[in-house]
Image (cartoon, rainbow, N blue to C red; front, side, top):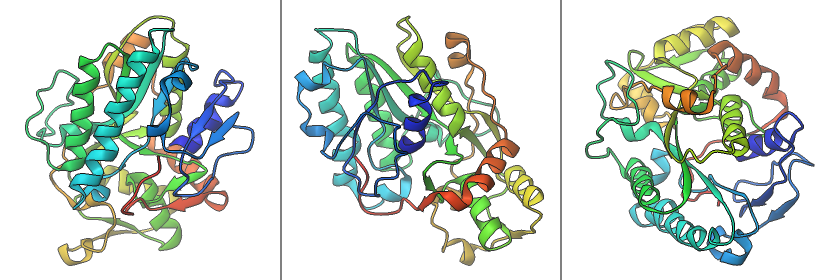
Length: 313
C-alpha cells in the first residue's frame, strides 16, 4: 500500500503532499523516485515526540499485515500490531499539544469475519470474539484509539487490490490475475462467500480526502469499493483474461498462500456509506478497472507474498 500511496499523494492530483517515509525496508525499497522527501530507515518506535510534532498527518501502515503472518506469532504480532501502535498513540497525544495532528491508520474489515454475510455491515455492528490474532490486534488498536484524545481515522479496509510498485500477489484479485497470467487459469475454492474489495486507487483517494479535509471527523470508517462473491470475482478475471476457471479440492487448497481464500469463515460484506456521507466521497473502482490496471502494471512491478515471519515497519 505504502509504495502506491506515496506516488499518489505526492502527485499534483493528490495534493503534492510532502512525505517522510519511515520504513525498515524488510521487503526492499520499491518507492518511486520523487514520491517522497525523506526516507528514514528506522523503527518508528524510536521516533521521539519532538520529531512527530513536526508533522500535520501521521499514517501508520506498518505491522503484521495478514492472518497468515500472525499464525503462531502471538507475541510478535501483538508487539507489532498493538503495543508499538499504542506507543505511537501515546507519543502523538503529547505531540498534539503543540499543533493539530491527524492520525490515520490501517484497521481491517476482517474484524467482521463472524458476520453472516446476509447484508452489508456498518461500523455499528457488534463484533463478537475475533477469529484469530490478526483480527484481535486490529480490533484492539481500534479500541485504544477510540479512547485516546487523538483526531484519529481508523480505516477498516476491504481486501486491498490493485497495482503498486511493491505489489502483493497473495490478495484476492491480485492473486487471481497473477494465476491467470502465469498459470493460464483462475483457481477457486470457497466461491460462494462474499468479500469486500477496496481498490488501491480508491484507498489513496480516501486518504487524500481525509488529509485535505479541514473538519475534525475522527472515527472508525469502513472502506470498500464494492462487495461480491469470490465466484463473481473469479469469473470476471477469467473473462477479462480469457482463461478457464479451475475449482480446487480440499487437498489442492492447502497449497494456497492466502488463508482467507481457503476459509469459509470470512463471509461478509461491508457498508461504506458513513465515509461517503461524511467526506462527500464516491468510490469509483470496479473489478474490470482493477484487473486492467494489474495487467498493465504486470511487467513493471515487484511482486511480494506477505507470508513471512516479519513485517515492514
